[in-house]
Amino acid sequence: MTQGSLPSLPLPLISALLCLLLAILVWRLNPGSRWTPRFFSLLFAELALTALLVALRFAYSIETFILLQAILPLLTGPSLYLGFMALATPEDRLGPLAARHFGVVAIVVLAGQLMPSRLSAMDAAISLSYLTYAILLFRLWRRGPDALPLARFGMARRISDWMLWGIGLLLVLLVIDSAISVSFAMRRAGQATTLITLGSMLIIAALILLLIALPRFLDGNTTEPRKAERTTDEERLEAAARALLTETQIYLDPELSAQRLARRLHVPVRNLSAAINNSSGMNLSQYVNGFRLDHAAKLLRQSDDNVTSILTSSGFLTRSNFYREFGRVYGMTPAAYRKENKPTRIR
View (tube, rainbow, N blue to C red):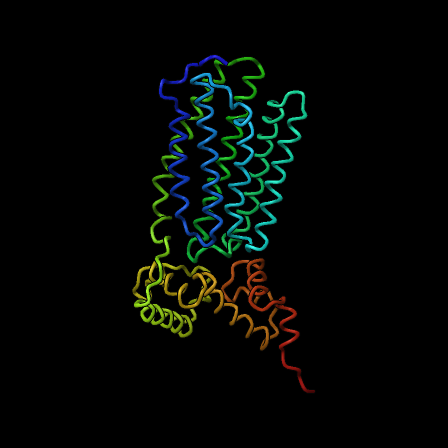
């Protein structure tokens, strides 16, 4: 295609620079799983490279990498989805899950090379990928914050809300890419160039908003190296947190947040999180859930209440999260635990 009407400083190039900056910044995130920032960095790196190739093609008429440009967007959906799933899936299951999703991408790419019109096949596959992963993300979002048991305490609800932005991104990309593909199919190159410009402007605005919001996640999410001289203070803070939770039983409140707990202890959230992590080897969410599980186990042993009533009164919001956490700690279902541990009544 001949050089279109994009500005002398191509907007896709600006998008590429912003995405590259985000790829570097999100690597510093510590939402609870080490794989989440890696998948998100892959996402923004892929978006940066795609935007760069778009700029080279439509602003400078360099079409050498046209096939790579057509393939890269197939990584967008899996990278975004797996970034969130890393907070919902244990590491031993995350590897096979990622292999399946990226394996499908590889199969689609190879199958596309056998099609008479490779680029058209890739366009169709990309649109289907955007739609598929938007649906998968929506299903994960509907499960609520408790679907993210590996998220750091107090961040699950915020991360769940960010899934909606991820869904919105995929749907916007679906509309823009589909419109551009239709324009090329109808041989309207000028219209396609205009759509690229408008799409780039919209994406740039979204990236700037994300850059503004990102510091909230970076603040307090970088774990500092443990220093020997701080060990005693951290152990004291963990003991204070344990005493507060035991005496007040505020863990029974399903809306308990890290901020609220830290305020009761008169310390910053970052200090409390580090103390719990270094003293117990757990993040705040797992730590608080431990008290909830102890309470639930006691009720299973000493009462005849049904499991739903017990999980609700123990501070859990959803049945799925309760069963997942209970199985992780006790290695069995609540029903099996009750059967094995409830005292036998003497008649």
